Length: 103
Image (tube, rainbow, N blue to C red; front, side):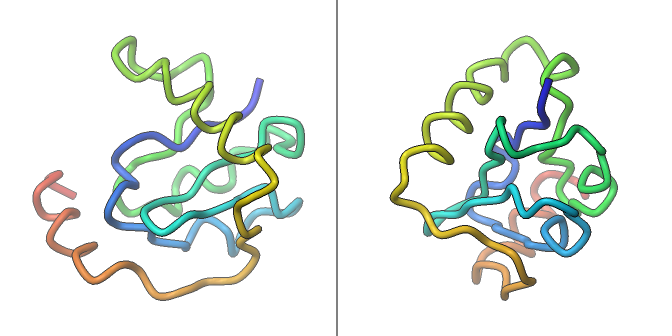
């Protein structure tokens, strides 16, 4: 089982989570982050760091978010995304999305 980033991250791309990841399993595109399922060691350190509660253990994803397991796998293993290992600035609309999500 791996951890999964779901759509709360879209449009935010806060990278607080990557600063605590001991194995650098995060990858990102222009809109969000993804977790590589084969690199994630299931430590869970990233979960409390996410300010928009976008990271879940695979078996704890809400039923309507299960597709994010495959999305994370496909995106992070594509070989086209940059591995994110250090904190980067959030996207310009991140704070607004955070408020919209009630976080």
